[in-house]
Length: 416
Ligand SMILES: [Zn+2]
Ligand SMILES: [Zn+2]
Image 1 (cartoon, protein in one colour):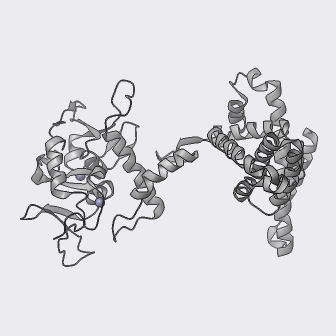
Image 2: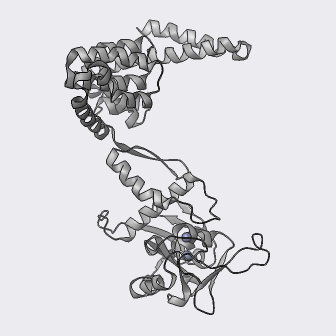
Image 3: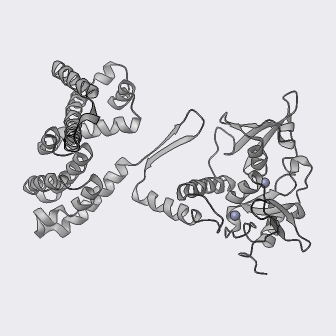
Protein backbone atom coordinates (compact mmCIF):
# COMPACT_ATOMS: atom_id res chain seq x y z
CA UNK A 1 0.00 0.00 0.00
CA UNK A 2 2.89 2.35 0.79
CA UNK A 3 4.25 1.96 -2.73
CA UNK A 4 0.85 2.63 -4.36
CA UNK A 5 0.41 5.73 -2.23
CA UNK A 6 3.87 6.92 -3.32
CA UNK A 7 2.74 6.57 -6.94
CA UNK A 8 -0.44 8.51 -6.18
CA UNK A 9 1.74 11.14 -4.50
CA UNK A 10 3.80 11.51 -7.66
CA UNK A 11 0.62 11.80 -9.76
CA UNK A 12 -0.67 14.54 -7.48
CA UNK A 13 2.68 16.34 -7.71
CA UNK A 14 2.30 16.38 -11.51
CA UNK A 15 -1.17 17.97 -11.09
CA UNK A 16 0.20 20.65 -8.78
CA UNK A 17 2.72 21.61 -11.46
CA UNK A 18 0.11 21.60 -14.26
CA UNK A 19 -1.19 25.04 -15.27
CA UNK A 20 -4.88 25.39 -14.37
CA UNK A 21 -5.21 28.58 -16.43
CA UNK A 22 -4.60 26.60 -19.62
CA UNK A 23 -7.67 24.37 -19.11
CA UNK A 24 -11.08 24.95 -20.66
CA UNK A 25 -13.93 25.54 -18.22
CA UNK A 26 -15.28 22.09 -18.96
CA UNK A 27 -11.94 20.51 -18.10
CA UNK A 28 -11.65 22.62 -14.95
CA UNK A 29 -15.01 21.33 -13.71
CA UNK A 30 -14.02 17.76 -14.56
CA UNK A 31 -10.76 18.30 -12.64
CA UNK A 32 -12.68 19.64 -9.64
CA UNK A 33 -14.99 16.61 -9.61
CA UNK A 34 -12.06 14.23 -9.93
CA UNK A 35 -10.05 15.90 -7.16
CA UNK A 36 -13.05 15.85 -4.84
CA UNK A 37 -13.79 12.17 -5.56
CA UNK A 38 -10.15 11.29 -5.01
CA UNK A 39 -10.18 13.11 -1.68
CA UNK A 40 -13.09 10.94 -0.47
CA UNK A 41 -11.47 7.72 -1.71
CA UNK A 42 -8.22 8.63 0.01
CA UNK A 43 -10.18 9.33 3.18
CA UNK A 44 -11.53 5.76 3.01
CA UNK A 45 -7.96 4.48 2.79
CA UNK A 46 -6.84 6.64 5.70
CA UNK A 47 -9.79 5.52 7.84
CA UNK A 48 -9.05 1.85 7.16
CA UNK A 49 -5.42 2.40 8.19
CA UNK A 50 -6.47 4.24 11.35
CA UNK A 51 -8.87 1.41 12.25
CA UNK A 52 -6.10 -1.18 11.89
CA UNK A 53 -3.64 0.88 13.97
CA UNK A 54 -6.35 1.37 16.60
CA UNK A 55 -7.02 -2.37 16.69
CA UNK A 56 -3.33 -3.21 17.13
CA UNK A 57 -2.91 -0.84 20.05
CA UNK A 58 -0.14 1.10 18.32
CA UNK A 59 -0.92 4.23 20.37
CA UNK A 60 -0.26 2.43 23.66
CA UNK A 61 2.97 0.96 22.31
CA UNK A 62 4.06 4.55 21.53
CA UNK A 63 3.18 5.59 25.09
CA UNK A 64 0.15 7.68 24.09
CA UNK A 65 -2.95 7.34 26.25
CA UNK A 66 -5.23 6.60 23.28
CA UNK A 67 -5.35 6.44 19.50
CA UNK A 68 -7.07 9.86 19.51
CA UNK A 69 -4.19 11.46 21.44
CA UNK A 70 -1.61 9.67 19.32
CA UNK A 71 -3.28 10.86 16.09
CA UNK A 72 -3.35 14.41 17.37
CA UNK A 73 0.41 14.34 17.89
CA UNK A 74 1.20 12.40 14.75
CA UNK A 75 -1.04 14.31 12.31
CA UNK A 76 -1.12 17.59 14.27
CA UNK A 77 -4.94 17.58 14.44
CA UNK A 78 -7.24 19.09 17.00
CA UNK A 79 -8.43 16.56 19.54
CA UNK A 80 -11.98 16.86 18.17
CA UNK A 81 -10.86 16.12 14.61
CA UNK A 82 -8.80 13.14 15.79
CA UNK A 83 -11.77 11.76 17.72
CA UNK A 84 -14.06 12.11 14.68
CA UNK A 85 -11.57 10.10 12.62
CA UNK A 86 -11.28 7.27 15.14
CA UNK A 87 -15.06 7.14 15.64
CA UNK A 88 -15.85 7.09 11.94
CA UNK A 89 -13.18 4.46 11.29
CA UNK A 90 -14.86 2.24 13.89
CA UNK A 91 -18.35 2.87 12.54
CA UNK A 92 -17.30 2.08 8.96
CA UNK A 93 -15.55 -1.10 10.11
CA UNK A 94 -18.29 -2.51 12.31
CA UNK A 95 -21.37 -1.20 10.50
CA UNK A 96 -22.88 -2.08 7.14
CA UNK A 97 -19.95 -2.59 4.72
CA UNK A 98 -21.95 -0.84 1.98
CA UNK A 99 -21.14 2.55 3.51
CA UNK A 100 -17.41 1.84 3.43
CA UNK A 101 -17.64 0.73 -0.18
CA UNK A 102 -19.65 3.80 -1.21
CA UNK A 103 -16.97 6.03 0.32
CA UNK A 104 -14.12 4.00 -1.16
CA UNK A 105 -15.76 4.25 -4.59
CA UNK A 106 -16.08 8.01 -4.23
CA UNK A 107 -19.91 7.95 -4.42
CA UNK A 108 -20.37 9.72 -1.08
CA UNK A 109 -18.32 12.18 0.98
CA UNK A 110 -16.86 11.61 4.43
CA UNK A 111 -19.52 13.78 6.06
CA UNK A 112 -22.28 11.98 4.21
CA UNK A 113 -20.78 8.63 5.26
CA UNK A 114 -21.19 9.63 8.90
CA UNK A 115 -24.89 10.47 8.37
CA UNK A 116 -25.59 7.32 6.37
CA UNK A 117 -23.79 5.04 8.85
CA UNK A 118 -25.76 6.52 11.74
CA UNK A 119 -29.07 6.22 9.88
CA UNK A 120 -28.51 2.62 8.82
CA UNK A 121 -27.53 1.75 12.35
CA UNK A 122 -30.83 3.15 13.60
CA UNK A 123 -32.83 1.47 10.80
CA UNK A 124 -31.18 -1.83 11.68
CA UNK A 125 -32.09 -1.49 15.34
CA UNK A 126 -35.71 -0.50 14.87
CA UNK A 127 -36.66 -2.29 11.62
CA UNK A 128 -34.19 -5.12 11.07
CA UNK A 129 -31.42 -5.95 8.59
CA UNK A 130 -33.58 -5.90 5.47
CA UNK A 131 -34.75 -2.34 6.10
CA UNK A 132 -31.12 -1.39 6.82
CA UNK A 133 -29.99 -2.72 3.45
CA UNK A 134 -32.79 -0.92 1.64
CA UNK A 135 -31.95 2.28 3.51
CA UNK A 136 -28.38 2.09 2.30
CA UNK A 137 -29.49 2.07 -1.34
CA UNK A 138 -31.85 5.03 -0.89
CA UNK A 139 -29.36 7.07 1.15
CA UNK A 140 -26.46 6.60 -1.25
CA UNK A 141 -28.76 7.76 -4.05
CA UNK A 142 -29.83 10.80 -2.02
CA UNK A 143 -26.18 11.51 -1.26
CA UNK A 144 -25.75 12.22 -4.97
CA UNK A 145 -28.09 15.22 -4.58
CA UNK A 146 -28.03 16.47 -0.99
CA UNK A 147 -25.41 17.93 1.33
CA UNK A 148 -24.85 16.27 4.74
CA UNK A 149 -27.13 18.65 6.65
CA UNK A 150 -30.10 18.10 4.35
CA UNK A 151 -29.29 14.41 4.20
CA UNK A 152 -29.40 14.25 8.00
CA UNK A 153 -32.82 15.92 7.95
CA UNK A 154 -34.21 13.60 5.27
CA UNK A 155 -32.74 10.53 6.93
CA UNK A 156 -34.98 10.96 9.99
CA UNK A 157 -37.86 9.85 7.70
CA UNK A 158 -35.96 7.09 5.88
CA UNK A 159 -38.38 4.42 7.11
CA UNK A 160 -41.25 6.15 5.28
CA UNK A 161 -39.45 4.94 2.19
CA UNK A 162 -38.18 1.51 3.18
CA UNK A 163 -40.63 0.30 5.87
CA UNK A 164 -43.74 2.50 5.81
CA UNK A 165 -45.77 0.16 8.05
CA UNK A 166 -43.56 0.72 11.08
CA UNK A 167 -42.32 4.21 10.21
CA UNK A 168 -44.24 6.11 12.85
CA UNK A 169 -43.29 3.85 15.72
CA UNK A 170 -39.72 3.91 14.50
CA UNK A 171 -39.61 7.69 14.11
CA UNK A 172 -39.64 8.02 17.87
CA UNK A 173 -36.83 5.51 18.26
CA UNK A 174 -34.90 7.36 15.57
CA UNK A 175 -35.38 10.60 17.44
CA UNK A 176 -33.98 8.95 20.57
CA UNK A 177 -30.98 7.71 18.63
CA UNK A 178 -30.47 11.19 17.20
CA UNK A 179 -30.55 12.68 20.70
CA UNK A 180 -27.98 10.11 21.89
CA UNK A 181 -25.71 11.03 18.98
CA UNK A 182 -26.09 14.73 19.79
CA UNK A 183 -25.02 13.95 23.34
CA UNK A 184 -22.06 11.92 22.12
CA UNK A 185 -20.89 14.56 19.62
CA UNK A 186 -21.23 17.57 21.93
CA UNK A 187 -18.04 19.55 22.43
CA UNK A 188 -16.62 22.99 23.00
CA UNK A 189 -13.05 23.82 22.03
CA UNK A 190 -11.25 26.99 23.15
CA UNK A 191 -8.00 27.59 21.29
CA UNK A 192 -5.87 30.56 22.24
CA UNK A 193 -4.48 32.43 19.25
CA UNK A 194 -1.00 33.94 19.32
CA UNK A 195 -2.36 37.45 19.95
CA UNK A 196 -4.39 36.37 22.99
CA UNK A 197 -7.75 36.17 21.26
CA UNK A 198 -9.70 32.95 21.53
CA UNK A 199 -11.11 30.82 18.74
CA UNK A 200 -14.25 29.10 19.88
CA UNK A 201 -15.63 26.08 18.03
CA UNK A 202 -18.50 24.09 19.38
CA UNK A 203 -21.31 21.72 18.60
CA UNK A 204 -24.03 22.11 21.21
CA UNK A 205 -26.66 19.51 21.99
CA UNK A 206 -30.28 20.56 21.48
CA UNK A 207 -30.88 21.56 25.08
CA UNK A 208 -27.72 23.64 25.39
CA UNK A 209 -28.40 25.19 21.98
CA UNK A 210 -31.84 26.22 23.25
CA UNK A 211 -30.33 27.67 26.43
CA UNK A 212 -27.71 29.62 24.51
CA UNK A 213 -30.27 31.00 22.06
CA UNK A 214 -32.68 31.97 24.82
CA UNK A 215 -29.85 33.82 26.59
CA UNK A 216 -27.99 35.33 23.65
CA UNK A 217 -30.79 36.26 21.24
CA UNK A 218 -32.46 39.01 23.30
CA UNK A 219 -29.03 40.45 24.15
CA UNK A 220 -27.96 40.38 20.49
CA UNK A 221 -30.57 42.87 19.35
CA UNK A 222 -29.23 46.27 18.24
CA UNK A 223 -28.94 48.56 21.27
CA UNK A 224 -30.51 51.51 19.44
CA UNK A 225 -30.73 53.21 16.05
CA UNK A 226 -27.04 54.18 16.16
CA UNK A 227 -25.81 50.64 16.78
CA UNK A 228 -23.38 49.94 13.95
CA UNK A 229 -22.20 46.53 15.14
CA UNK A 230 -22.58 43.55 12.80
CA UNK A 231 -24.80 40.65 13.95
CA UNK A 232 -21.66 38.62 14.66
CA UNK A 233 -20.21 41.41 16.78
CA UNK A 234 -23.50 41.78 18.66
CA UNK A 235 -23.60 38.03 19.42
CA UNK A 236 -20.00 38.26 20.64
CA UNK A 237 -20.88 41.15 22.95
CA UNK A 238 -23.96 39.26 24.17
CA UNK A 239 -21.75 36.35 25.21
CA UNK A 240 -19.51 38.79 27.07
CA UNK A 241 -22.54 40.24 28.87
CA UNK A 242 -23.69 36.77 29.91
CA UNK A 243 -20.23 35.94 31.31
CA UNK A 244 -20.10 39.21 33.22
CA UNK A 245 -23.53 38.61 34.69
CA UNK A 246 -22.49 35.13 35.80
CA UNK A 247 -19.30 36.53 37.34
CA UNK A 248 -21.22 39.29 39.12
CA UNK A 249 -23.57 36.82 40.84
CA UNK A 250 -20.62 35.59 42.93
CA UNK A 251 -22.07 32.10 42.70
CA UNK A 252 -19.48 30.52 40.40
CA UNK A 253 -17.34 27.79 41.98
CA UNK A 254 -14.04 28.95 43.42
CA UNK A 255 -10.95 28.62 41.30
CA UNK A 256 -8.06 27.26 43.41
CA UNK A 257 -9.44 28.90 46.55
CA UNK A 258 -10.03 32.31 45.00
CA UNK A 259 -13.43 33.60 43.97
CA UNK A 260 -13.94 33.55 40.20
CA UNK A 261 -12.95 37.00 39.00
CA UNK A 262 -10.68 38.87 36.65
CA UNK A 263 -7.66 40.70 38.05
CA UNK A 264 -6.15 43.60 36.14
CA UNK A 265 -2.65 44.64 37.15
CA UNK A 266 -1.67 48.21 36.39
CA UNK A 267 0.45 51.03 37.74
CA UNK A 268 -1.00 54.01 39.56
CA UNK A 269 0.05 56.24 36.67
CA UNK A 270 -1.52 53.82 34.22
CA UNK A 271 -4.82 54.18 35.98
CA UNK A 272 -4.88 57.94 36.55
CA UNK A 273 -2.94 59.39 33.68
CA UNK A 274 -3.85 57.02 30.85
CA UNK A 275 -0.14 56.26 30.60
CA UNK A 276 1.04 52.71 30.04
CA UNK A 277 -1.49 49.94 30.13
CA UNK A 278 -2.26 46.97 32.29
CA UNK A 279 -2.08 43.21 32.29
CA UNK A 280 -4.89 40.71 32.68
CA UNK A 281 -4.27 37.71 34.95
CA UNK A 282 -4.03 35.68 31.72
CA UNK A 283 -0.89 37.69 30.92
CA UNK A 284 -2.57 39.73 28.22
CA UNK A 285 -1.69 43.41 27.69
CA UNK A 286 -4.45 46.00 27.85
CA UNK A 287 -4.62 49.61 26.65
CA UNK A 288 -4.93 52.41 29.29
CA UNK A 289 -8.54 53.07 28.16
CA UNK A 290 -9.45 49.42 28.65
CA UNK A 291 -7.81 49.40 32.12
CA UNK A 292 -9.80 52.46 33.20
CA UNK A 293 -13.05 50.96 31.92
CA UNK A 294 -12.42 47.58 33.56
CA UNK A 295 -11.47 49.24 36.85
CA UNK A 296 -14.95 50.80 36.80
CA UNK A 297 -16.53 47.36 37.09
CA UNK A 298 -17.39 45.51 40.28
CA UNK A 299 -16.62 42.08 38.80
CA UNK A 300 -13.05 43.07 38.06
CA UNK A 301 -10.38 43.54 40.72
CA UNK A 302 -7.74 46.12 39.90
CA UNK A 303 -4.35 45.38 41.43
CA UNK A 304 -2.63 48.74 41.37
CA UNK A 305 1.14 48.87 41.78
CA UNK A 306 3.25 51.85 42.79
CA UNK A 307 6.63 52.71 41.27
CA UNK A 308 8.40 50.05 43.36
CA UNK A 309 5.99 47.36 42.24
CA UNK A 310 4.19 47.21 45.61
CA UNK A 311 0.44 46.76 45.63
CA UNK A 312 -1.49 49.88 46.53
CA UNK A 313 -4.94 49.05 47.81
CA UNK A 314 -6.75 51.88 46.16
CA UNK A 315 -10.00 51.86 48.05
CA UNK A 316 -11.32 48.56 46.82
CA UNK A 317 -14.46 49.07 48.84
CA UNK A 318 -14.73 52.73 48.02
CA UNK A 319 -14.88 52.23 44.28
CA UNK A 320 -17.69 49.69 44.28
CA UNK A 321 -21.17 50.89 43.50
CA UNK A 322 -23.14 48.18 45.29
CA UNK A 323 -25.92 47.73 47.84
CA UNK A 324 -28.14 50.77 48.59
CA UNK A 325 -26.12 52.98 46.25
CA UNK A 326 -26.66 50.65 43.29
CA UNK A 327 -30.37 50.39 44.15
CA UNK A 328 -30.66 54.18 44.19
CA UNK A 329 -28.89 54.34 40.85
CA UNK A 330 -31.24 51.74 39.37
CA UNK A 331 -34.24 53.72 40.63
CA UNK A 332 -32.90 56.86 38.99
CA UNK A 333 -31.72 55.49 35.61
CA UNK A 334 -33.98 52.38 35.30
CA UNK A 335 -31.59 50.81 32.81
CA UNK A 336 -28.77 51.82 30.50
CA UNK A 337 -28.94 55.63 30.42
CA UNK A 338 -27.36 55.98 26.96
CA UNK A 339 -29.75 57.63 24.47
CA UNK A 340 -31.84 55.04 22.62
CA UNK A 341 -30.72 52.00 24.65
CA UNK A 342 -33.33 49.63 26.12
CA UNK A 343 -31.11 47.35 28.28
CA UNK A 344 -32.55 46.77 31.77
CA UNK A 345 -30.42 47.29 34.94
CA UNK A 346 -29.38 43.64 35.23
CA UNK A 347 -27.09 44.08 32.21
CA UNK A 348 -25.61 47.36 33.38
CA UNK A 349 -22.37 48.50 35.02
CA UNK A 350 -22.21 51.54 37.23
CA UNK A 351 -19.87 53.96 35.50
CA UNK A 352 -18.00 56.65 37.46
CA UNK A 353 -18.52 59.93 35.57
CA UNK A 354 -15.32 61.26 37.14
CA UNK A 355 -13.02 58.23 37.46
CA UNK A 356 -12.44 57.09 41.06
CA UNK A 357 -8.72 56.79 40.37
CA UNK A 358 -8.69 60.53 39.66
CA UNK A 359 -10.50 61.31 42.89
CA UNK A 360 -14.06 60.87 41.66
CA UNK A 361 -16.43 59.96 44.49
CA UNK A 362 -18.41 56.75 44.65
CA UNK A 363 -21.77 58.43 45.02
CA UNK A 364 -25.05 58.82 43.20
CA UNK A 365 -24.10 62.19 41.72
CA UNK A 366 -20.95 60.71 40.16
CA UNK A 367 -22.50 57.52 38.75
CA UNK A 368 -24.47 56.51 35.70
CA UNK A 369 -25.88 53.13 34.70
CA UNK A 370 -24.56 51.82 31.36
CA UNK A 371 -24.89 48.47 29.57
CA UNK A 372 -21.67 46.66 28.64
CA UNK A 373 -21.76 48.00 25.08
CA UNK A 374 -22.36 51.62 26.04
CA UNK A 375 -19.96 51.47 28.98
CA UNK A 376 -17.28 50.53 26.48
CA UNK A 377 -18.54 53.26 24.17
CA UNK A 378 -18.28 56.04 26.78
CA UNK A 379 -14.71 55.03 27.71
CA UNK A 380 -13.49 54.57 24.15
CA UNK A 381 -15.27 57.28 22.14
CA UNK A 382 -15.62 61.05 22.28
CA UNK A 383 -19.09 60.99 23.82
CA UNK A 384 -19.24 62.57 27.29
CA UNK A 385 -21.76 62.21 30.09
CA UNK A 386 -22.78 64.54 32.92
CA UNK A 387 -25.68 64.96 35.28
CA UNK A 388 -28.01 67.79 34.29
CA UNK A 389 -29.50 70.29 36.73
CA UNK A 390 -32.46 67.97 37.37
CA UNK A 391 -30.08 65.21 38.43
CA UNK A 392 -30.58 63.00 35.36
CA UNK A 393 -27.75 61.94 33.04
CA UNK A 394 -27.35 63.53 29.63
CA UNK A 395 -24.89 62.63 26.91
CA UNK A 396 -23.04 64.98 24.58
CA UNK A 397 -22.14 63.61 21.15
CA UNK A 398 -18.75 64.40 19.57
CA UNK A 399 -18.64 67.40 17.23
CA UNK A 400 -18.12 65.28 14.13
CA UNK A 401 -21.46 63.60 14.82
CA UNK A 402 -23.41 66.68 15.86
CA UNK A 403 -21.71 70.07 15.21
CA UNK A 404 -24.03 71.76 17.71
CA UNK A 405 -23.27 69.11 20.34
CA UNK A 406 -26.74 69.17 21.84
CA UNK A 407 -26.98 66.89 24.89
CA UNK A 408 -29.21 63.83 24.48
CA UNK A 409 -31.12 61.72 26.98
CA UNK A 410 -32.52 58.22 27.14
CA UNK A 411 -36.28 58.36 26.58
CA UNK A 412 -36.78 54.64 26.65
CA UNK A 413 -36.79 54.08 30.41
CA UNK A 414 -38.17 57.50 31.32
CA UNK A 415 -40.45 59.49 29.07
CA UNK A 416 -40.12 63.24 29.37
ZN1 LIG B 1 -16.77 53.36 33.42
ZN1 LIG C 1 -26.79 50.67 26.56
